[in-house]
Image 1 (cartoon, one colour):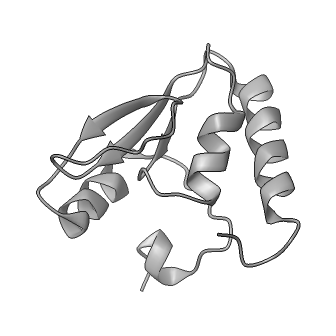
Image 2 (cartoon, rainbow, N blue to C red; image 1 turned 45 degrees about the horizontal axis):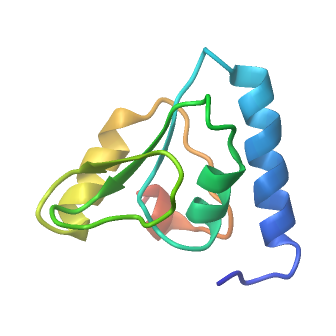
Length: 101
């Protein structure tokens, strides 16, 4: 679910524009969550590498990108997620999402 009515369109546009600008230069990683992350993954072209980190035994069920099992629970997954990126973009998120104090 989205907090604002225009967030889904914004997220899809962001994914499309970043995919075009960064094709072959970047990969995108989600934490396999519904809503913003799912919309982002589904809005990227299939030729772009999108990875969805999920806890062991979990699945994103996006039908987009590749699921990678990381950690035994969401806290371990989050710790890995915060170590693998160079740039993080949040939509409808705050400090708890970004890992900032």
